[in-house]
Amino acid sequence: MELLDFDIIILGSGLAGMRAALQAAKASNGKLRIALVSKLHAMRSHSVSAEGGISGVLYPGENGDSADLHAYDTIKGSDYLADQNAVKILVDHAPEEIKLFNNLGVPWNRNRNGKIELRAFGGMSVNRTAFAADKTGFFMLNTLYDNLLSFKNIEIFHEHVATKLLLKGGSFAGVTAIDMATGNMKAFISRAGIIATGGFGRAYGFTTTGYSSTGDGIALAYKEGLPLKDMEFVQFHPTALVPSGILITEAARGEGGYLLNSKGERFMKNYAPSVMELAPRDIVSRAEITEINEGRGIKDKKYGDLAYVHLDLRHLGEEKIDEKLPMIKEISMKMLGLNPAKDLIPVRPAVHFTMGGIDTDINGKAANGLWAAGECGCVSVHGSNRLGSNSLSQCVIWGRITGNAAAQLAIKSKAPAAPKTEIEREEKRIDALFERKSGENPYEIRSKLWQTMDNNVNVYRDSKSMRSAKSILAGLAEKYKKIAIDDKSRVYNTNFRDALEIENTLLLAQVVTEAALARKESRGAHARKEFPKRDDKNWLKHTIARKAGNQIRLAYSPVVITKWKPKERKY
Picture 1 (tube, rainbow, N blue to C red):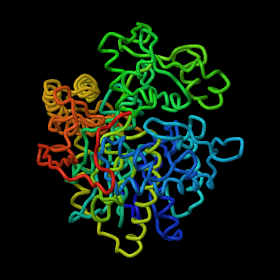
Picture 2 (cartoon, rainbow, N blue to C red):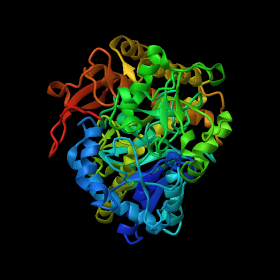
Picture 3 (tube, rainbow, N blue to C red):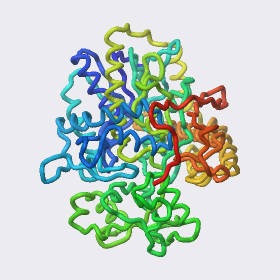
Picture 4 (tube, rainbow, N blue to C red):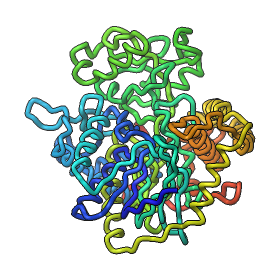
């Protein structure tokens, strides 16, 4: 196995990972050697799919907006499970990050006065989401990537799949990875590490996320004994295109789109009368499923077996759609042959974001020498429900924070010795997987995993369904131990890569189910049929999950409340 020495290793090349690399390079004046390791080509990281925008109070006082109001909206949206000291960091630093990206070259939409334009998003009291049409993530990531290329001390390792997190005495020492282009294994040894690998939406079948969103960094951390936080809180986005699950950005409703049931009614008047379609995502998703379950959904065989509701953008007009929502028009026309200026769009809730992740402190620190940034790290700024457009703010802010912290540590610390025993053991594990001649088909396991999570741990949850899911997942985990890889080649072996990802999603699905079964209340994205009310007396606390042999051990930690006391959530 090839050994590579770096000062900082960043695992993941989305907005959080690239922002961390930029900050670490600047903080060290270009002196530290930084490895950005991505299982994809870096510009194909899932951040590129973010559509609607990034939140921040760019113009305090306008429309009554302030950092305090942004914080309150975020905390209320989180159903009071967000740590309020983390939220303060988010709202205080979001504007400067948007301005930084403006200086780096992001082509923000602007109003007639040349100011960055802000659009409405669900749960936000006023317009505070900056955007670049409906391709915000693409433009932000592309801009970061272009800027990183100017740093000689940053080396980007495209298409390197991480297989193990290396810890020595509880401190970070590096990662092992397979170079997809050659099939060779590499051990990246480093003084500091940042995990920025995103969420695990692909633990479900019907999801807006790409096939790469398999929670690899979260699973690698969990396997090494690091705790995970609030894993039961999985966000469903209300407007996923049927039948593909492709995201139809919340900006479509922010620009004035309606949701209609089979009777042509704007049904959100019955669930969130003051904000209608711009209620937080958990409320809109439950409303849609309620409409469907009560017989007011729509079914059309040409769109598959899933019932749905309609998204109506026709009244916006072609000109506004072309200016503000061009990609939504392109997606609708390419996938379904529907023009949103003339046709109703079939949508329903799909898994979109995972609020839970690696348990970190307020600065993203997960262990000695190791940080987590972006969706894979739970600081916790989103609590039980994330407001749309807060995710990109989280990614770049904690990318900056962790990049700076990792640089400071790397500057003053000594390089660790390579943990040779762990590296050799990992190499033997990978070789054994290739050498196994017959066994279970990993794709059949994945198919059953998706079916189980879609059916049993969805928008509405109940004990019977989740217990069934727990049993099925345990059986799948036993089957996984006996999988076989049909493709025995080492070069660009996507069969092998998929098998590793399936193990990660299966493991995280088990943690989600265990934590969801234990939380006997409804809060944010976690809606229990038997416990329909929020229970602050017993459940105003974070769930902490640790690996204990083959078992999942749950514990709890308090929510940080500094200013806003929990109260009933009404919209």
